[in-house]
Image 1 (cartoon, rainbow, N blue to C red):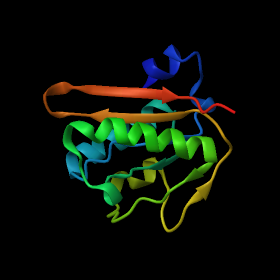
Image 2: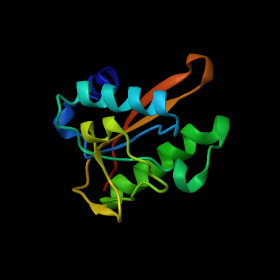
Image 3: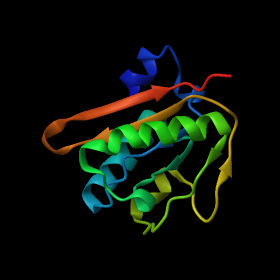
Length: 128
């Protein structure tokens, strides 16, 4: 995440929201929440994950999630996480729950992690 943000020439404070990979597995969600907390120094932007609505599209997940994240960033509206079960690590991140949240139009960080180590973190910047 840090490398993607730096590669975009941005700071963590420039990220408007995060689209988490959100595997819905305790170990992976715990790890992602801890990594977000470390990356953003305990002050993460709002975090959502769309898999609770779309399901897991296997190889297509990352592309769809990136497209949705960019659309949300451009509109300044972050959807809530569907079917969320909070864990002890939930307090480490700013989860969007209950309803959508309005945020300023800003770059979004989209995480996509796959079996076998195919991991990508993209910073996407909405345009006019």
